[in-house]
Picture (cartoon, rainbow, N blue to C red):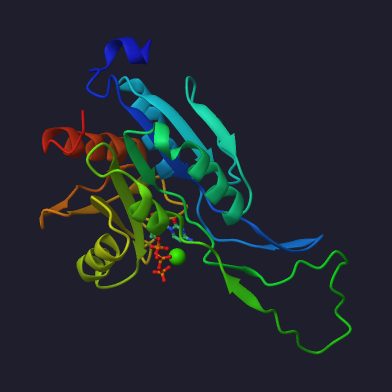
Length: 227
Ligand code: CTP
Ligand code: CA
């Protein structure tokens, strides 16, 4: 019903969204992860479907319900998210990487529980593949719009611009994770959107659902859609 009432300005688009954290196993009892709730990514998936897109949501572990009408692919680790994204990105006309991918994983996963019979413990971590950077290199920028996120706590525009260029994104949405009002667990957010034309837009502080709609409005109004 909501879809019937909404403007179908994403009709014909295939949107691939990644959302949530990833979990990197350490032993049978433990994992490494981060504070992402998945709310921003799910809001982007839900609003894209409402506006007429076909939506594929690659999701790390969250407590959220899959938005109706959206094809959800559940993953746990960064490597699994990488594999799922690489299997599906060719279908997409818009790719949005809202997931908070764990930057590191344990170098070896212990099949046995690590015991505490030691006063200190060293965990060796190894860097995970950068999914967004790989997409920046691989995707067809004439046919596909690549939107990254950046989680920052300082120098927002500067750090965002660096990531936009390093990862060859078309747009990057910078999230302030240093503030309690925005970022991970919060229900509201404020995005700073930078693009490869050199422009910067500050979206207002609103609910994540509204924030997602404002990002779509920005993409549509500034003619970033490829078809
Ligand atoms: N990202 C990714 N794969 C990773 C790490 C990050 O695809 N292994 C993506 C995120 O989904 C996000 C963007 O890259 O869209 C920026 O993530 P962020 O954590 O802000 O930046 P990093 O490049 O990981 O750098 P750092 O954490 O050191 O700031
Ligand atoms: Ca990171």
